[in-house]
Image 1: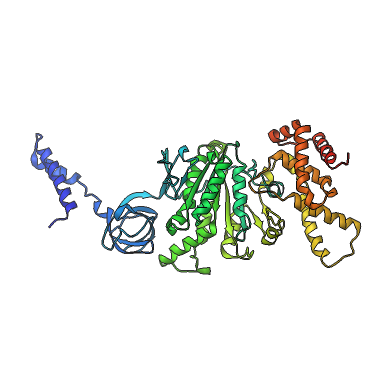
Image 2: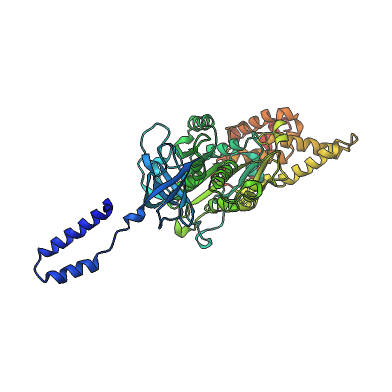
Length: 519
């Protein structure tokens, strides 16, 4: 008995012959021509059979021409992606519940690799790793379709990082500035404020023509809901897309989420726009990939991670770039987040991502619990390219701030073993401690550039040294308020041009000293 599909193709051929017979001419030659030109369909290779299924993995036979990364459709409409090609079968990760799928059920090829719908309508929405809305606001009208995996821009397609991506956080913008197109790692132990820094950076992009994408990987759904609420309360939802693959979702979706977010970012970048994307966090992403790899029976290596775990993140982060003007000049700035255990930056995943990125903001638990928030470790944090993108006013105002704080930390350690200090050293300790209090900042209150410049100029003139550390926060607000009232023209000039003249600096110092009664 013929297969139904084969019988259908034979009927198709029979119909062609009947059509030819209706024409004038030699019947035999027409039949010969029809047979010679007929090509068998590849429908047989487009369908396969499930051999085994379980733990979000399905093995399929019969798909002889299937490609790596191709999307397959299983029973019940469940989709999966080919992740392993073997001699007589393929292994596929499933993007949904595997309950409708049974051994022997049919599988259909789509001929498409994994992708995500994209478009301007995604701004302000919450979607899953497949681009489907999960915020209850209805369907999203897509403008295009982007593959989740795509090559990173070539060197000749890029240009150097020269424009700032302000975080609004004084400790970062002054000492570890981030430029548009840069990849800056945020690293630290659990509950040290990593996500807060990323969210504050998103809040600071208001009215700056920057599209923000927050990718939540393996987070609690309640935590992501709180972040969405915070973004909405601050008006940041109007320029932000949230891609959520929560801890309750399959490991395959957690694995796919950052690539889906990056594909969405690339759509805006190639449209000539600047994008800020946050991956929160890549530690959980690596864990999800390790789970998939072990289920796919790949050989485990260090800490049970597969050998290609470095490539997992390098091919993701290398897609962040600032395009050349010829390609529109758009950019993707990446802020990947990585969680450490007991401050161990030498662990496998942290060292991998440190070597991929252009610098890191290291958050220290001890500083966090001392009340120094953001808890940025001055010694271990670095920005390798951001200095070129720092605004001239901030660069001039920050001066030797990082060196001063590094010296203070050394003297502070030495001071634990000595009680007899000279006056110069005591003044240095007071200055350093007050600088640390100056860098403390409330959550969800990013500072504009002119405010940062005013505070740094005042600090360089030792204005804060005349008050107790506990009074620094009040004095900061007083100086900024006085500057906005008395030298509003300078504030506006710094914000627009990013430059600071000598006369402007003198006027700022005069206002700051007046606030502490020195003039």
